[in-house]
Length: 276
Image (tube, rainbow, N blue to C red; front, side):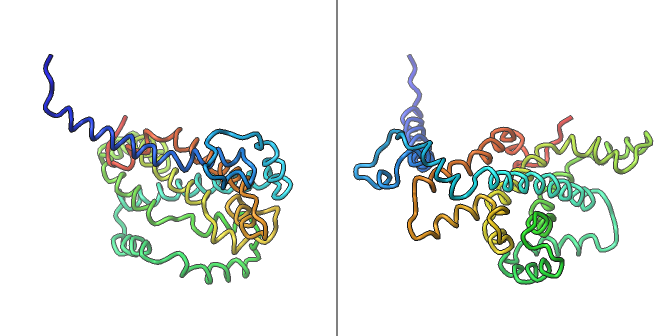
């Protein structure tokens, strides 16, 4: 039997990777366990590492305090609509910058790219004043519309669409296809990995968004999950069992969304490959 000289090295690498995986999973495991415990049990020493029997009571208390069904719907509706619209806008803008020549193209793209350097907090007051002027406070459109054109997503789509062979577009034009048909029938299918990457980025950013919804929304019926959970933290007495359960519920859609698109997400981040 031949023993590889690299075997001890591989064992060390795999051991370190296992430790990294355990350290990564541990907070999520503790969060799930905490959602089944009473608030006092969460801080017990030594900690309780097995599920408790308080899950249903925590859910009932959380629902009474927040109305979890309505809040979950708000978050899901806003995140899905925002993701679909923002991904489409990013794809259209990326296609235009990658495959069309027009006056001011490079300076305009430079401005979009430089906007990545502007902290989001700088735009809060102007955007809030605009929402007041439009009478959009405490509405879905106030959360969805202001940041639909995401600079990073436009940049990512542009970089991926530059790798699409121009010959595909020219062949479609020769066959008599219009620009919209080319975009939806030729460009989008071959850039699915990039679209998946953008969709995941946009869904996560909107689902986890706290500051802007906290400023814009002022009624409990319109709260999203992050805003609702922050209201729990602001109470005089914090029920950590409720908080753990709410946090657990808020992570489930992100995990499902990522698991569905993970293969295309990785391909999209690596970027540029054309699949037919």
